Length: 111
Length: 114
Image (cartoon, rainbow over all chains, first blue to last red; front, side, top):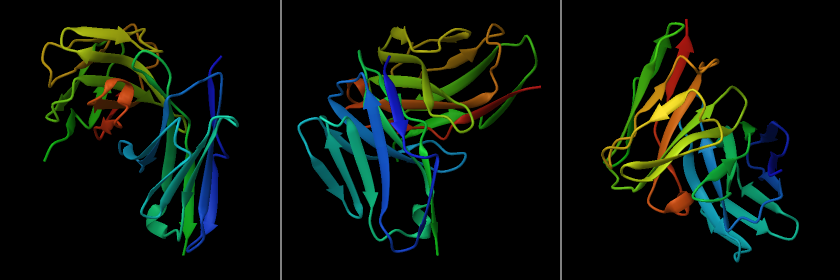
């Protein structure tokens, strides 16, 4: 069956360091993969989308990689700030107009 | 500003009642979706609609119903058949099938059974 795994439920890092979040998947062949940020009690906010033929995509301090051989996406936040503390979700397109979301990784950036 | 409006923000349901969650968008998106989120978990797809007057079941449609009479509106009814309805409900829309341009989410409705 199709499965998405995001690395450890919680990730704690020091301000200024680079946060790296992982999204692994099995039994998918996604055409694209998305990353979202979700704050407590709020809806997710779209951050980045990367397509299967793209290896890397950047947006300001954010960088996403997509390795279809390893079936893995890495999401990096450089020069992290306490304001980056949130839960980050990855989503893969599955079939017929649907996407499947991972359970998320909660990032805490300590000053 | 364009966006998605969900109402109410908090909703309390008695056992055996049906309740309807509202979702309105002014983004001119064709596709709309309903997700359920339980604590510490990801989003699970309840129903989705790619066009007016058409919708499909998602992964956990049992106990829920929807309608899509207007492009802007996609209300979700949680029926008494849903045995464990307490959750955070999120509505989303996209301008491309399957969210290829990214999903825009509402701020959610938290439903509690009392």
